[in-house]
Image 1 (tube, helix red, strand yellow):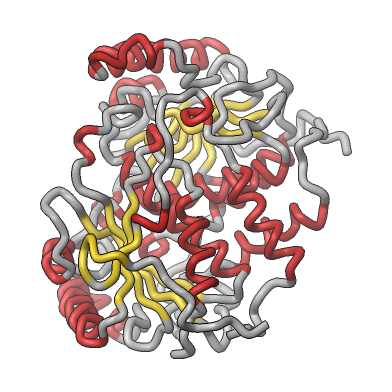
Image 2 (image 1 turned 60 degrees about the horizontal axis):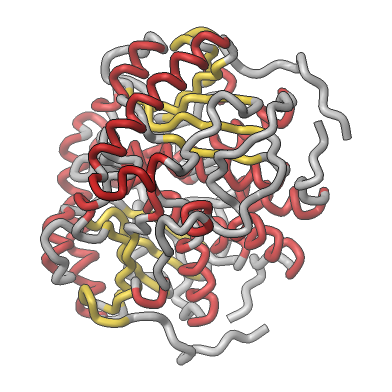
Amino acid sequence: MTTKHRYDDADRAAVYRAIAERRDMRHFLSTPVAATALQRLLSAAHQAPSVGMMQPWRFVRITDTNLRLSIHALVEEERLRTADALGERRDEFMRLKVEGILDCGELLVAALMDGRERHVFGRRTLPEMDTASLACAIQNMWLAARAEGLGLGWVSLFDPDALARLLAMPEGSRPLAVLCIGEVQEFYSRPMLEQEGWTRGGDIRGLVYENSWDMPGWPENQIQEQR
Amino acid sequence: MTTKHRYDDADRAAVYRAIAERRDMRHFLSTPVAATALQRLLSAAHQAPSVGMMQPWRFVRITDTNLRLSIHALVEEERLRTADALGERRDEFMRLKVEGILDCGELLVAALMDGRERHVFGRRTLPEMDTASLACAIQNMWLAARAEGLGLGWVSLFDPDALARLLAMPEGSRPLAVLCIGEVQEFYSRPMLEQEGWTRGGDIRGLVYENSWDMPGWPENQIQEQR
């Protein structure tokens, strides 16, 4: 099943390397991020697929220190509310580092544009496809950042309405991510929530079904690859 | 601003190459996909970030021909409904090829698991973070597929409740994507909806703001990179 469109082994390995080594970072050095590197990350985001090519993503760079402090305060507020909602794991959660907003070299807010109701193609029955498109853009940026040696952390602990007000966002738009970007001392060798003992990831082989939910379906080697 | 964690030029270029060359494919050859390649794609998906590490993704492989036909019929139904909803662009839309369900080597349905309401970490105020996590997983798979020389197309033209019934999905789960995967004759050189004149993508430089919505914020070269 070899295909003429397949990348050579080195290029293929590099793609899988970025996928494997990408981490959700919360520890940053405060070194500034070069504008050219940031341009490449934003361009990578913009090359993501989007439903009906609506390109619903917008990015707000936070360069104002007071605004960065306000965003941090907003996240801190939600961190406490989340801790309370977690009940018996409250104290354990409060010991986790969940963001690096005050430390990272570059802070972005990623948001969905307003006026999305006009876009029907591919989302008449699945309106959340705009959110999915923005997430694909952020994942592109995440992998590009890893290749650049830059960490990226996606913080979703905030009240979206409060953050929208802070950034003078129009009605109908919606922030989805506070993105911390920057140089790091080390990338975590495993996901940080595993490293800290908060949780353990599952095995993908149990999450693949065949034809019907819960029917085991991990692909086995009936079909051989020809190299 | 060079960093010790940065990939070498060749590896970095390979990551950007996959990002640039990935396409939402609708034209496929019917060659079967090797199980080992499919395993690598699913493992790439599973290495995606997920909010609070909830790993909400589930994949259903469609190996039953009748089921594949039923899914195609479901998509065809929604294609007609979408065409009607598009009004004056109806006929133009009907001429587009929007899926390759009957042709592709491998057909998967990607879905959100049930029981997601238990997961509060990072989604108390943003419940759609589960959808975002699944989209990141699909984007990983998409880039891995491109490196493998395999096309992938994300079809979102379906009634999620009807598809859930077809696959005996439990209450609380939700399908987000019908994924067509397989060998292709050629990858589109540009996004297919651009190639066909349906729409044109915007310029990322106009989608980046600074501190406040609509304030131009494309990063310029105040900070130089040191190589």
